[in-house]
Length: 183
Image (cartoon, rainbow, N blue to C red; front, side, top):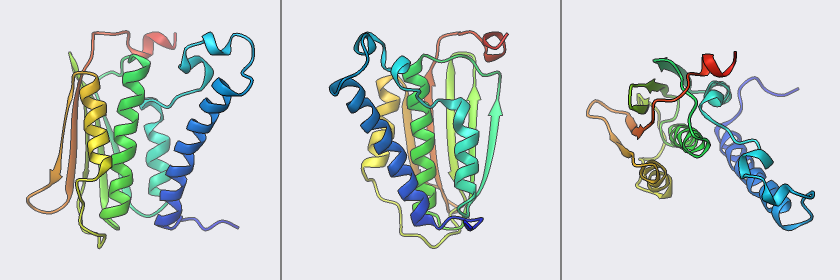
């Protein structure tokens, strides 16, 4: 029987396996006998890609490893361009992985705000854990590059009273709301 709470190392390994699985599936599909026509399909037709609609599942998975995770959605979700949706998801995923790695048994708050012309992502941990101090490693650089790729920005750093905050602002065009998409 599996334990109800996964050790942190197992969760980090899980993140790595998910990423490698996506890369492997794409490599196999493009290089080793993809079905006729598959190479002419856009990548999002070949491989299902995560988006912000899957953050709830991600938050639940992370919460099962120990940290308390609270997800807040503000505004009405709009259908995002697939690349932007994937990048937004990956920013949240990396910020959560960092919280698990560095903040120990912290509380993590994820805020996704759909504003008129922008999408804001904010991931904050209370930093009460005993993990090693955060660094400016590849994860923070990668999150910043993802935001800048779409004309956005990312700020990340320790908070004055303890904890760590990642804030991304990504411009969006006024799109179709998700409630209209599902009709």
